[in-house]
Length: 207
Image (cartoon, helix red, strand yellow):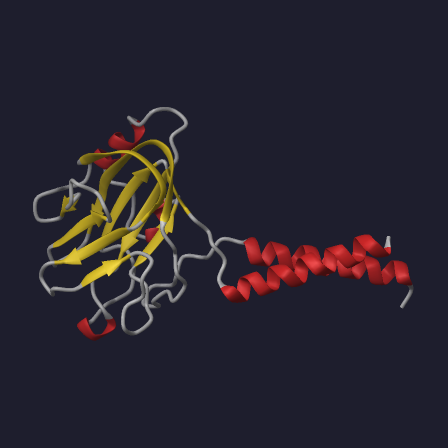
């Protein structure tokens, strides 16, 4: 194979691998638990607001934030879509949790359960949850946020597989402003990324 063709092939492979490594994780199909750690959410130092967006849970559960003095943030027995809580000016990694008071199970977004399944999923698109339109009160609360505010939705699965979970990640959904996924690649993804970078480096050197 001519050197120029080899260089071009290595370049294309490198770009493809990097694109694969950096691509966002797709929303899991209904009934399929995610085993990919979503990690913590990251705050940028601006004021953050939690908005109760949606509930389809039969159990009573509470949303919490590690280290937050105002826990629980929400309780689906007393809160409803459109309710808001000011989380203050957060900075750095933020770990949210869900305490199912009915079953006694507690989940952290970035910690797998005993089966290796995670119970939280992040997305910027509410439609990913497959529950129809965002409730009007929640949509109004989001629309009232300052211009330029980022919004991330966190959807929860409130039961384990042994408790009959349907793993649809829409039992409880909350909108969080100025908090974004950390997007830390898993070891396999990092390996792919390294291969891609090496391929690009080799191609550039051969040029």
